[in-house]
Length: 330
Ligand SMILES: Nc1nc2c(ncn2[C@@H]2O[C@H](COP(=O)(O)OP(=O)(O)OP(=O)(O)O)[C@@H](O)[C@H]2O)c(=O)[nH]1
Ligand SMILES: [Mg+2]
Image (cartoon, rainbow, N blue to C red; front, side, top):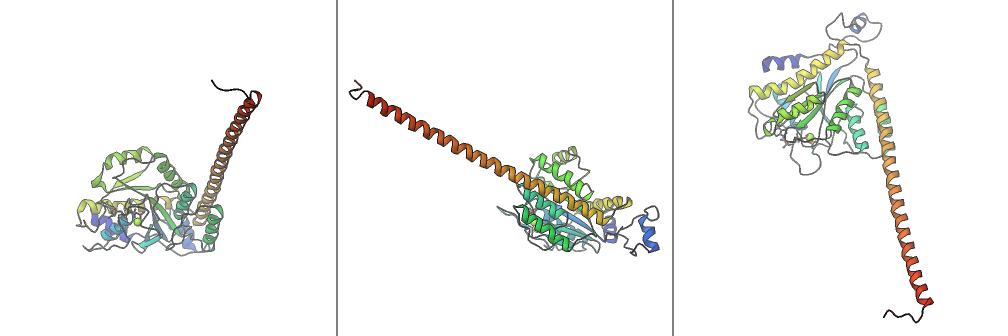
């Protein structure tokens, strides 16, 4: 397919939002996928959720998506995409509309994480953190639970979440276990296999990285070169690669909506997953603290033992001197 055709398909994509309510005839028809090609089943927009390590190109990908969908040669930096020596650039969870029915979310990037920070990633994935809110890495159970309670005040059932993992070709080595776990958990939480996007394809061996991801079971891996301030002359290949990511995401949505889905049940499933995850994170934190406490106890015990030995040695020496007061070491 030509880039222009893909672009048109994306722009025209709709979740077929029809009449609501169980009493409604159209609604009953919509419940049965055999009647219609695609049914929204209560979903009103597709939410493309971006995740990945800091600096791997999430924000640049958003700018690229907007750029290839717009009919313009001016790259507008909607999302702040910048090189940073330390820490992440994007700290606030922001959403950008790609079309009327498709929104893309720039989530906070991560480096190495403790289990609560991982839980925070899943809170973003499950859409439990409001858009436009600064994502603080939380480090305790109570704060995380408060976060969930707040989300319940304003639950969002109508977003169909598609996870997208952004990974830079500049980083050939990665923590395989962590990435694998993340991909598996994306599936458990959203029911959709994450799409892997390898960015900066001109700067690294993207074919090798693609193989790694495929071996880990990734279904869709697409290597792209983002359009950036410095380099944004539109080309056929680059534009097509970027459009294909959105296109594949929509294919996933269409496929999943052919099976029966229930947005409320999906939301509850995400919440259950997150609750379990937070409990596990809490247990892990307690175990680590307990291990640290035991280690400290062992260290103190060892110090006490050495002190006791020194004291005994000193007593022995003194006793020796008292028994033999005329003792001279000739
Ligand atoms: N050459 C090239 N540079 C890229 C590409 N993608 C991103 N960059 C550059 O890499 C830097 C980091 O990109 P960002 O988009 O800010 O990364 P991020 O994942 O949003 O990072 P955080 O917000 O910190 O999580 C910026 O200078 C981008 O211009 C790409 O495909 N090719
Ligand atoms: Mg960013």
